[in-house]
Length: 352
Ligand code: NAP
Ligand code: ZN
Ligand code: ZN
Image (cartoon, rainbow, N blue to C red):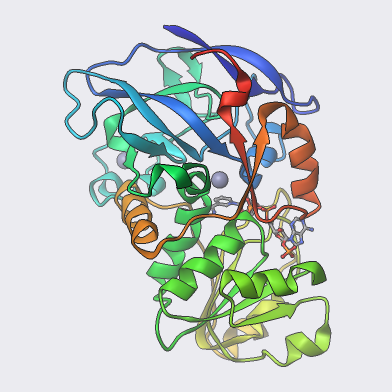
């Protein structure tokens, strides 16, 4: 066991604070990772503030982890000390169900999240990447092929990247397809970059007038400020696929009406209370679909990282020190981050 520094909360109504936590010594199949950077996902905020059911305390969030391998167990074959690696939202799963065998560990009923998941070693629940070090079975560790100078900006790919890549691929975003991305935050800005790199015509939807120019710079061919009804009306019926990343309840009808026949509105945003029910006529009149998608499996996460390395894609980030995390959460709630906060774990001080 090793004791390390971390940042977490002791209750849902308390701010995050420095904590000491323990990690297991690496077992035969484990990779021990010295964490360099960890992205700040809106899911971290939902979980740590008990906005979703079932948060266990102390809660140490963080599932956009990048760093270097510091030790490996004797049966580890794919990694060695010094390798640049990442860990996303999954640190274990049942490994033998239909989903695990197909590489969809994200849809396994026994999936263990990087934080707030069940674990015996050490007993309790998993603690995430706002910490100096983590020990993970090699099956759930990803290789990073970007240059080391981009490491901090690679971190958000481990959740924001895969959560947008997976549905874009599944529903066939690419050349000849018109794709909308709703909500230009951590997930949404990655969705724009990825859909553009896949060859789609990309339209960004934002509630923030201040993001109009910035969303174009991310690669959107058009930007619509969704508060302007005439701008929304001009988009009716033209989309094959719309990826909705918004972290709060809102009218889905506004976006269903923009889909072509057989178009799909895929929800990845996970607000703590439900969206108002959509008008069923918006579905039946053009055989439209509403769907959902959860992160992505391990093989697809590696595919996404390799795709991003090949296309020179990283997140646009604002690097923060660990003690700025509570302030960062407030700015994230106001949509005032372009586009992902990433914690510089070295700011926690001391050696892991
Ligand atoms: P984020 O950085 O806070 O971005 C969310 C964006 O939604 C905001 O930047 C904002 O964009 C838009 N928005 C519009 N109205 C809003 C409101 N009232 N409150 C908050 N946002 C509003 O969050 P994120 O990290 O991208 O995560 C987005 C959601 O996806 C969260 O609910 C998160 O838990 C969920 N998530 C799901 C998965 C999955 O596997 N399905 C994985 C990761 C995260 P504009 O300013 O452009 O309008
Ligand atoms: Zn996340
Ligand atoms: Zn399984």
